[in-house]
Amino acid sequence: MSKADEIFVSNLTDIIQNGFWDTDYSVRPHWEDGTPAHTVKRFCIVNRYDLAEEFPIITVRKTNLSNAVDELLWIWQKKSNNVRDLHSHIWDAWADGSGSIGKAYGYQLSLKHIYPEGEFDQVDRVLYDLKRNPLSRRIITNLYNHADLHEMNLYPCAYSVTFNVTGDRLNAVLNQRSQDMITANNWNVVQYAVLVHMFACVSGLKAGELVHVIADAHLYDRHIPLAEKLIKAEQYPAPEFVFNKKDDFYSFEVSDFELKNYKYTPLGEKIEVAI
Image 1 (cartoon, rainbow, N blue to C red):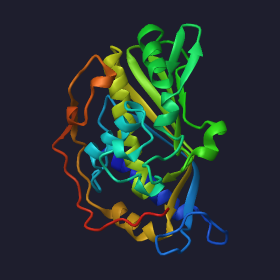
Image 2: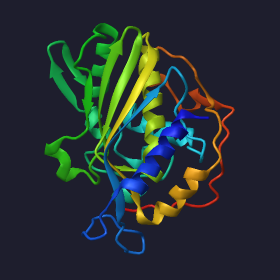
Image 3: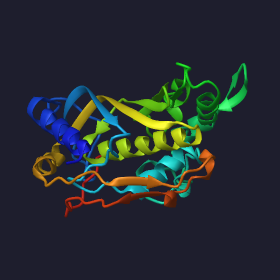
């Protein structure tokens, strides 16, 4: 069975059985009907995925690869903060009348910084170092810019990535301050697995390990029945991940990525999202 399923189900089980409930506290998130959205959480979950072994997509429900990659390219390739550049509607609740989500996500990656070697934005600096100084221990991106937080419609959740090369393998540590496990966990894992594959490909490396560190891994109260259903859902082997190899990071398109033999258990219900 998929190792991503094993990790995901283990996380859900741990949170339900051993998590801390915030029902006695006032909380910011709420449901569309205005009801407070309370959670049960575990502090600091660390998951490891060997991308050379299999692609980390769950099968207990479907994770939409195309939409996940589309959002990834919106942030890391287009470096956009406007939902009009995105093909899905997952960010609509956080956008203003012009479509902007403020100085968040792609905006931060687009900012140029001065280095001894010249001026780079964060993405181009990663590409520069992976090709010219792959053994550097300073290949880091960070979206959590405190000076701009007041102009972000949502503080970054997945906010920092540390890239590290071991031999010919590119590894990455994804740091996430907060994770809605039902709506976003495997979505983010899939995205950053794809990102590691992309950076490795254009840098002459192989995809290695993705480590996902989640400070606040939580389940919303209305998601508990679904989490219990997913824990018991049928699991399938991981699909084969294939993509068109390219030399230019900025030439990748959503259509370049594909899953072969992706079998999954149909969810059969819409997931309510807390905002």
